[in-house]
Image (cartoon, rainbow, N blue to C red; front, side, top):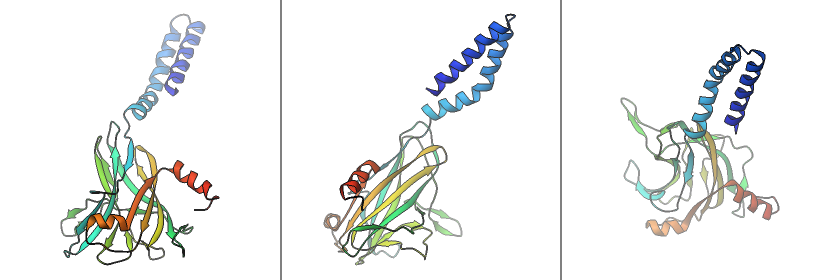
Length: 240
């Protein structure tokens, strides 16, 4: 639509130039208008047809939810989601931000933390920096038709806390989820892609199971789009 409007404007400019300057000066004006508009048209075409297109994917099964081991060989459960690039170019400097947090109240129902400050989540594949050791990534480039995993949180052995994998950890706000139903809003930002977000509902019993399949019944994580969430809020009288 925008491209059609630009071309129409150029055509009108050219016609006016031909009428007012019959000695082909109108043609020069038309060519000049095209030259001036070309960078904007090229940028618009690139954005519309060659831009990255991000999406979030999560299923409550492997590899998104999995039993693994930490650096001291102790078992722990990890939960991650993946960010997919279904566009036609690389998504640059992607970051995952935990934007909003609802924690279980006394009845185990989610209540929004109005004072929560947005903070980054860490990507699942750290790298080794010589002389420093393992470094967690905050920004990732995602090539077209590729996906990369980002951590939501983890549960250490025999612990009843679901620790959010945020960086940095702020002492002034909670960084774990206790048993009950919680809700988080995660946004994905990139230098050259449209921002997206999803809501994750975390229902956590607080019980540890050694078997991965059994543990999936103790903690359930589902992902929702904003439209579904708004319907649920309206159904409950506007209270989350």
